[in-house]
Length: 498
Ligand SMILES: Cc1cc2nc3c(=O)[nH]c(=O)nc-3n(C[C@H](O)[C@H](O)[C@H](O)COP(=O)(O)OP(=O)(O)OC[C@H]3O[C@@H](n4cnc5c(N)ncnc54)[C@H](O)[C@@H]3O)c2cc1C
Ligand SMILES: NC(=O)c1ccc[n+]([C@@H]2O[C@H](COP(=O)([O-])OP(=O)(O)OC[C@H]3O[C@@H](n4cnc5c(N)ncnc54)[C@H](O)[C@@H]3O)[C@@H](O)[C@H]2O)c1
Image 1 (cartoon, protein in one colour):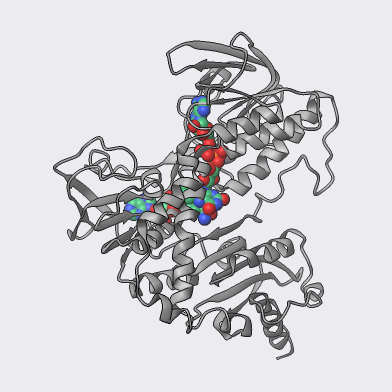
Image 2 (spheres, protein in one colour):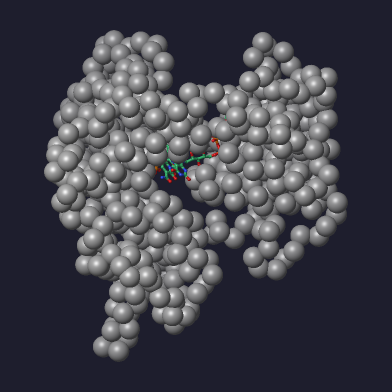
């Protein structure tokens, strides 16, 4: 949908460069309770990576796999589904519906209906409060902001500097979430969140030979160690080869093509690994982290160095720029590369912009709407593997690295009545990291079916610094997975009495 904005208009109160889910929130929060007017400049699709190439398509692909696995592992439904495979075509069709066939009309309509303008084109800062937009036809449009410019330019998949890898035109997260053909043999470079989720749906969709190569000593290295270990066990049981502590030395692909996202990018590809071992596959997926989109957005025009994550303060103002007019939110600020955290930052930035525009002082009280608290060690995340991983706060290793005196508790989730009825072969584990002196939770990790929704209870406990003595009175319903709270607190009580 073409954005219906007066082509001669050049001034708004707020300009947001990048209309990802995060940029949309920044524009909304800056304008909804103020007299400010905002425009979003978008080079591709309004809704950004999350809506079309990341969260939404990936979760659309994973959901049928989870349902099938649950049905396969439950006497009664097991007899119905047997070992039948998913209807891959139907799963891909549902994925396409969920991403609106890469059509952003409904998101543009939302913006315009909300009173937020949209300018299509590539935006670059070209001075203080000034953005120059290059349109698809090569035209240029200079926009000025009366109050603020917000950078929400996101990130792209980082391709490690391995000889031959870039030339092999590997799949990235864009291809693997938008796949249209299911390769027979796949090798994934990286063993983090993107890799583990993608491995889950690739196997579910029928990839016959899958190898995951992770440079660190374990999968999902940012989580508590048991999370990656449980996922590795599940992958091995599904026939996936997991090579940890292994790096790719070189890649070779004789035939490459210009096929669009999600189609094979050439003939077979061979990766040579540390030690000289080789892996050959029909497609290679690079899932080795992200790179911020900050190289070519005009940062130099306001005295900042291009490239890298853009540093912000807790009001999401870009540091090193005077006048409190430049903000950065979402992946490009590097605080937490997650949609929900980016949107939280955007809500803060929007409120700050609206307040500063009318001279309202920003509250310095804890837990106000103008200050980023959660990005400091209170970030929740759910990884939708099978089993799922939910975590919030810091791990035991992070706590100990900071010299904190912590108590840890672990519990086998399979030992609960709530999980016993959920799935016949339940596999799962929970861990709490407790600050001994303050008797509050610093971190929690749950691995298991049905834990995604449990994660928020831990987030409330961590952010609210709920004393464990108080948590004892938060009684979990029976029989639910939440009963793990009771078991963990019982374990703590016995430790203390013991
Ligand atoms: C495979 C995958 C799965 C994921 N799943 C989850 C999940 O389940 N949950 C979760 O919380 N997070 C998930 N993430 C992370 C999440 O996608 C990102 O954190 C989120 O998209 C960041 O939002 P953003 O608005 O900052 O950036 P983006 O979504 O990247 O949006 C940036 C926008 O800016 C535009 N843009 C860039 N430069 C310019 C410019 N110069 N001018 C104009 N427009 C520009 C881009 O076109 C884009 O639309 C996933 C990521 C991947 C890769
Ligand atoms: N469910 C979710 O919330 C979800 C899902 C997907 C992605 N994300 C977000 O997207 C971001 C990007 O995910 P990601 O998985 O790309 O990054 P990541 O940082 O989580 O994992 C990348 C992994 O690749 C490994 N690696 C890097 N270079 C390598 C090499 N040359 N050889 C082998 N291994 C190598 C790293 O050691 C690391 O473990 C994450 O920060 C995550 O927050 C979130």
